[in-house]
Length: 151
Image (cartoon, rainbow, N blue to C red; front, side, top):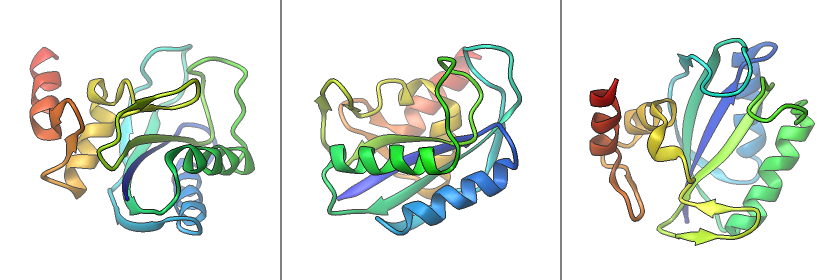
């Protein structure tokens, strides 16, 4: 199954944090595409440093819930703490889509419930997959154009 994962870091060595997360993810999934890093302003939450964001595409046989558990383990190993909601972080891994699955559980919503609002997810995703789409919402290119027109 094709999965899209967004990565972000705004504490410590941001580039190293993202590279380390990609290396850890590559141990459990087959990473096929990786975007360049994009520096972005934080959205919501307290005042904090700028982020580096990227997106990867991978293939996996893992169930989305199992993949999420493994992603949370990677965040923990790389020093992620969760004291402040939407606070600064060494690494943030978000499962954006898993195939065409649409689901909502206590711990996982697919597609990611805010991905379609976040240029810092859509721009790097579009870089590595020009025909990307969000199940139930449409083409990433069209969604991103709508966001950019609002700015």
